[in-house]
Amino acid sequence: TPASVGPFTVVLLGDNGVGKSALASIFAGASDSMGSECELYGGEVFEQTIPVDGERATVTLLDMWDSQDEGSWTQERCLQTGDAFIIVYAITDRSSFLHASELRIQLRREREADRTPIILVGNKCDLVRCREVSISEGRASAAVFDCKFIETSAAMQHNVWPLFEGIIRQLRLRRDSL
Ligand code: GDP
Ligand code: MG
Image 1 (cartoon, rainbow, N blue to C red):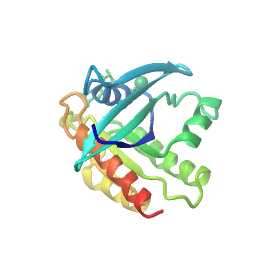
Image 2: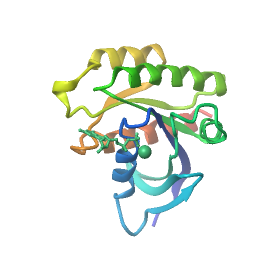
Image 3: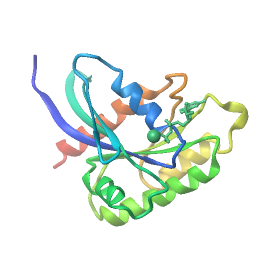
Image 4: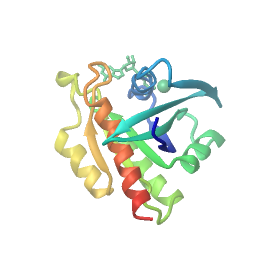
């Protein structure tokens, strides 16, 4: 098998209940043989090697963010260890969207001046009748904070792989520009 790039550490951030673990379990379920899983600091860590544009990339996905645990050691570790970040809100929950912006500001403060890839994710896009955040608001917020944007539905498995592929492409672009 050809060599793969990485491992890249990708960290899931966002309010409790927005669907981080649902997204992580789709990532984890990609294959039974290559993926591995373990528990760390009360959260979960998943590793997968994924082919993107003909190159294999190994990603370690951290699902251990607890939004109730403000300022904790685990939160600090999460913000410091990521090579890239997935900031998730639920399109059905405006406060999770506002908190996503705060997380972006917090990340910029902690990771000053480095071009850490970030994707803003509006999850639960299957719940159209309960939508509280429009696609254009999501897009505009991502533009303001200089990150990528995608809407997903973990429940419908919609746009979940494009999300992970997108973060890998950003990581490669950043690597190639160093
Ligand atoms: P976390 O706290 O961010 O890890 O959120 P979870 O992954 O535990 O999800 C919280 C709840 O939202 C669970 O009941 C999930 O089944 C549900 N959920 C997660 N993603 C989606 C989605 O895309 N659509 C819908 N309808 N429900 C979702
Ligand atoms: Mg969770």
